[in-house]
Length: 323
Image 1: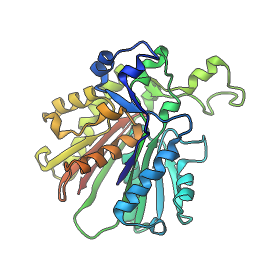
Image 2 (image 1 turned 120 degrees about the vertical axis):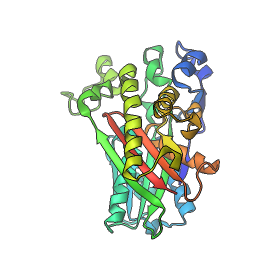
Image 3 (image 1 turned 45 degrees about the vertical axis):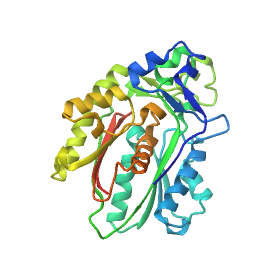
Image 4 (image 1 turned 60 degrees about the vertical axis):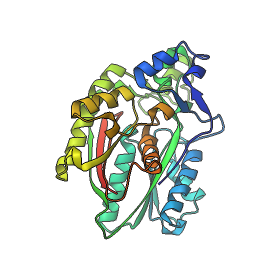
């Protein structure tokens, strides 16, 4: 695995200079103290490339070993093509399949599941899965947009998956979607639902080009779906919470994680959290958290870990892994 973050650190205090907010207000609602933002010259691929190289180095694989590239992102450099095409080029890969998926905060787990199926079928031996986001390019960094702007950060995390003959690896993945409330967390434009994209440059239309969230509804659904999908992974593999060394949830909001821990009857140290440093990095949050948990010795050989995510769509997912 490997991860990469922009150098620009934006603290809660920094935000008070550009919008009506406070460190106390942000921490009380999210637990976030600071986050990383890309500069004007950085894009999602600029974060994905070094994260991928670190993962490949750790795995000891060369570019010619990669059979498939899957990129999870909501903030590709261009409307099309996807970041995966840029990775194929910049990493010097063969002409293997490469595609992006857009499953929001659940996208990295979705990507792991897709990679797992390709490997289990024998189609691929080595798959690169990357979650990368430069989504702060889209947020409204004013008082009007503060409910969203204070939450999000940028970053990338990558994983190399390979076939093996031992008991470690992905045990199962569990993917879900319920689209009826998709407008509770969405970005309307650019998209084919608008009548004329070429001329959609008026101030009113430009407002559709930023994320919008109904925080109350998202919170309510997240605290219900996280425990459900974690329990689904446990039941599928005949595991109990006592068997699991660590749960790594998508880093959406510390208050959501605290509510999930309370509902499941576990202490917060069972759930890995680094949201205070990075904010919500959407598809990148789980692989970044996994990398840091590994560096801190929170994941060891033989450990059972559970990944869990909930995000726009609504999508939610989990993965059970034996390290």
